Image (tube, rainbow, N blue to C red):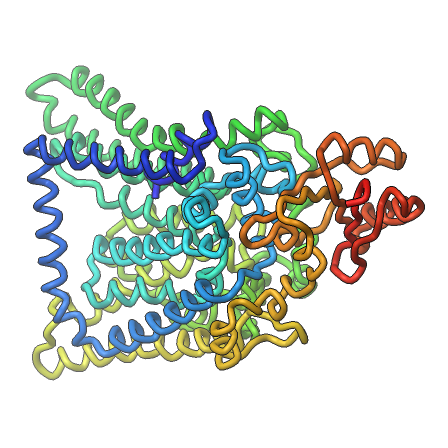
Length: 623
C-alpha cells in the first residue's frame, strides 16, 4: 500500500503523470527493479525463500486450528458477510454521503487533471490527507470510473485482521484463539458498514494496530537492538499509512514512538549493565544514544517521506497544515468540536452527561436496522459489549497475574489515551480499534484457561476446552446477530426511499444500466445526467454536499467552485473566469438560497435547466 501511494505521489504531484501509461510504466519499472535486487543479493534471496517457505509451513499447520468449532463457524459467517459486501461494492453504485461529497470527488478531479493537487470543488479533499483515496485513484486511472474506489479500503481490513492475530500470538495466545480475535474485529457493525464504501476510519484504526504490532514484536535480549531496525521501519510504514489516511493518527504516531523508544531504552539499559565491565558505561551510553536516534528515525522517516505531502500542501495554501481546524497553535475556522462534533452529536449523547455515560449510551444502543455506514450509536455491536469488552478486563487480570506489562503499557494504555483524546469516543467509527484490543486480550485469557496445547487431554482438559469454545460461540451468537442487522435490509436506498432488501439488491445487481434511475442519490439528478459530456458546472463556496452525481460516475463533467457574491454582475464575471457553462445551486442551503433568488431575477443570463433535482441547474450564455 505504501509503495502504491508513494508511486502515485512521485509521478502524480510534480508532473501530470496520473495517467495510465506513466503509472503502468512506473509500477513495472519499480517491480522489475525489486525482483532484480532480490535475485542478485544472496542475503535478500535467502530471506525471500524463508518467507515463502514460512508461509507455506504456516498454511500446512492450520489444520489443527479448525478443531475449534467456534472459529469455523465465525470464519464462515465473516466470509459470507464480506462476500456480500464485496458484491454490493462491485455491482451497486456508491451512495455513501461523504463519498458523494468529497472522498470520491477529489480523486475524480485528480484523474480529470491528470495529476494530484488541489481540489477546489471538494474542500475536504483539499485539506484532509488523502492516502486511501490515492489507492482508489489507481483503479480510476485505468478504468476511468470510480466504481472500484471502495476496494481501496479492503487491504486495511486485512491489515486489521492480521494485526489482531499477530498481537494475540505475540502475547501468548493460541492460534485458534488469535483467529477469534482477528475475526471478532471483522464482525463489528461499524467495520462491516464501511467495507463497501470510501470511508477511511477503518484504515486509520488498523494502521495504528499494525504499528503497535510491529513495535511490540521487537526482538529481545542482549545485542538485539540492531535487529529491531526492520521492525521499527515496518512500524514507521504503518504510521506513514495511518497519517496519510487521517490526521488523527498523528496522536497514534506519538503513542507508538513513545512505546517503541521505551522498549529500546529498557533493552539498552540492560545491555549497558551487562557490558559495563568490558567497555565502560560511558562508551556504551554514547553508542546506545546513537542507536536510539537511528531507531527513532526509522519510525518517523516513512511519514516524512509518504504523508508529509498532504500537510505541506494544506499549510502552503491555508497557512495551517490542519486547516480548517484550530489546533497545535495554528488558527483555523474553529476546533474539531466546533466544526464537526456540535452538529453530529445526537441529543441522547448530549444529555448523557460525562464520557462514561456517553459510552454506555452508545454501547448499549441496539444496532440500528437498516444500518448506516455512518452509524453513531450501537456501532460496535453486541459482540463488543457482551464478549470483547469483558475480554479486556479478563485479559487485564491475566497480564497482571503474570506480571506481563508490555500488553498493558504498550497497547492498553496507548489505546485508552487515543480514545480519551478522541473528540467523540462514543462514535463507533472513531474507536473501531477498541475491538482489536478486546479480541487480543480475550484470546490471551482463553489460552490461559485452556493451556497452550491445541489438543485437550483428560477430563479437566476437555472441560477447559469446552469453556473456551462456549465463549467463542458467545462471540459467534452476539456478532452473528449484529452482522445480520447490518445486512438485511441493505444501506442502499431506492427511488421510493425504502432500503433494498437482500433479494431486491440481488435483482438490482442484475440491472446495472438502470441503477442511476433507482438508487439514491443518483436517481435525484436526472437533469444533471442529460448535460453534455465535458460540461463545466460551477458551484458556490457553500454549495451542495452531494456532488459526485453532478460529475457522473465516469467523470463526464467537471466541477469548479466560485465565491458567492451579493453583486450579480461580479458573480457572473467570476463564473466566466472559471470557464463555467452551468451553475448548480442548492436551494436548501442558506447562502445558495440567496443566490437562487438573485440569479432568477436575470432569466436571460441564467436559464433554468431543471428545478426538480436537489440542486437548481442554470445554463450560462445560452448553454
